[in-house]
Image (cartoon, rainbow, N blue to C red):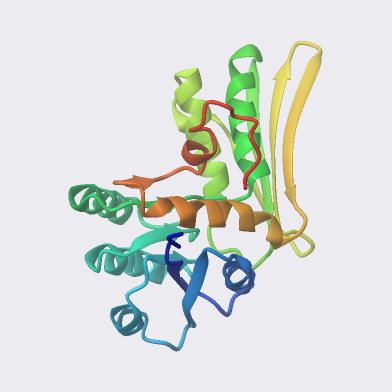
Length: 241
């Protein structure tokens, strides 16, 4: 019987809360091998050149995350990026370079399966009610506002509704006591529909991250929404393995 070699993984931002959770998830997965846990004081490019992982997971900050993405593409390493707030022009250029190189990867504003479902359900509901607004809340250390999830939700809703994205309000809250929360509120005559997702523990991101890592090398482009992977199977209700 032939055994496939584990997918090798490096994690940038390994000392952060998301990074620590991701490192633990990779270590517990039998088909993945953690080859580098890279912190803020490490030379990431040198480490990537040294270990040459199959996949780089990045949970850092927008000011360095764009460089990390470019280095991964340059070295032929599939990126899985959860860093939000990347400069749109830099991101678009990276997507184009990866497509030219036929290199797969995943860049997602949210790896929680429930959050992806929240966004999809909101798109289904939006055409049937008159008005819509988004409220997102995160911990005070989150640097970007609105969040990447809220921005992606608004873009999806605008596309479905045929409206300008700026016409859909986003209200951002940064307070202690939150990890991540988003509510899409739709109003109609005499009724209100709320679709809400709350992150209660960062371990909820692990299944989506592992899915992205396992699929990254089989792709030939950068996927910009975890929904593309979650819903690619004909049976959309099949649980993640």
